[in-house]
Length: 162
Ligand SMILES: [Zn+2]
Image (cartoon, rainbow, N blue to C red):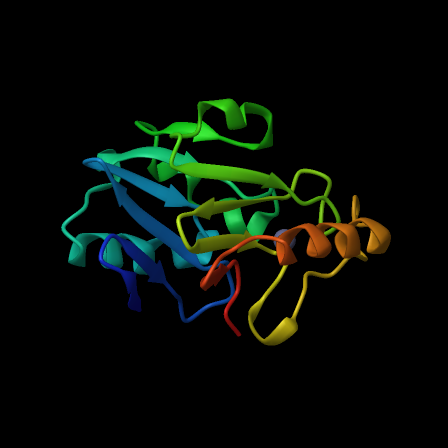
């Protein structure tokens, strides 16, 4: 299901468990944030098709962290430049990364104007990511949440919506 967040930002949600996927159209480039779980491959392709986008049209693929439910369809986007926590300097300058360890060690968020893409660090209604999986830290996620509170954003785009 496609939700239009802004003129050039779309939220894709799926029937089966897996992360939400975001599409940003920025300066004629299609940027995808996360790819959900493998089970959602067909639905992801269908939604992109409805937006008139083919997998090869995705120029940049950003992964908020490396959990399976966020990276399951990476194989569809071989044309895209892959950006993980290790290559954040390659992000377009409009996208500002914020390191937010806690849910995992490699978790980061992205501020784009007044939109915050928060991965599994924070969710709607004060929710936050679990810290009981490998690499998780309760202490770190609380610190990360403090950092996010300082940001001036209006729209939250989390990695899971329910
Ligand atoms: Zn996760």
